[in-house]
Length: 157
Image (tube, rainbow, N blue to C red; front, side, top):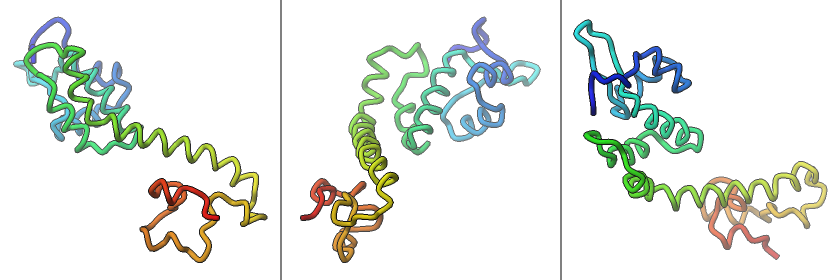
């Protein structure tokens, strides 16, 4: 990482620009997600390129991606040169399937949640989530009609 350049930021400036608390930057750094360097006066400085890493971390957290997975992706990115589009594409490829699955789950939830809220469970025969005698419970915990395999998501006859 380039150090002592004109594009470096103090910890306060970095936090303000990234929209996070200073303590959040310290935590990310302790977790190995971002890096800083120290001046001769022992002031912490960040290369401006770390802003992109913080943005990726924040977006991933918003989507529920654990920091360990975020670290795995960020560890694939070069530190000794600017990150190219190809670097990002290769590193983020591991998230593609997981994000597609989350999008599908959110769409499924959106499609049935309106029905559930308006329904009030007055008609179990028409309920897309009805699980007669908890037959789907043997397949695992949770709302199987939303989170289960595709054959569990289909309304049983």
